[in-house]
Image (cartoon, rainbow, N blue to C red; front, side, top):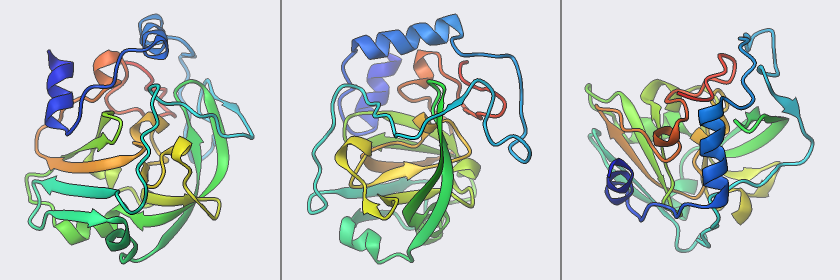
Length: 226
């Protein structure tokens, strides 16, 4: 019931259960990839249990929505003074921001030095003006995927609403035309095919969080599972 409610409230059907979903849920139950170590991002660039890759693996829930820039829009609402509905062109009118950061996937791979271009989440928040009670952000994607982060993590200095990667428009397989990027957290928190951002006072776990994955997801603390 909780999963169905999450899907209906956040704007789309819950993604279908797949073999990958079942496998990753089993990993959570088994504690797969856990090392029991902790690391500090200031001194350890590679978090515990991670290995470096040079390519960029594609992971999704079995469907890749085909949302062109001309049809994409982002709904930003909730505990904010100035809710927005942004088209791609309206998003591009925000100040452009570039960041180079690392990706850390909960399935144990990491990729260094990814260059992102897009809109700083801080600039977006400044435009919508979160109310005093705002504490969390709920994210919804065009494939029905959902996830949740604290407002503090969403507003991290290097967090972006990204439209390009390494100088090229984001491809459909990697969440284009627009995805979230929060480098300080495992990458399942960086929702692909971003559709809506709801600012709230009460947290609500998303797709993987209700399937045994950690609510916060700090790679250096190895917060893979709940």
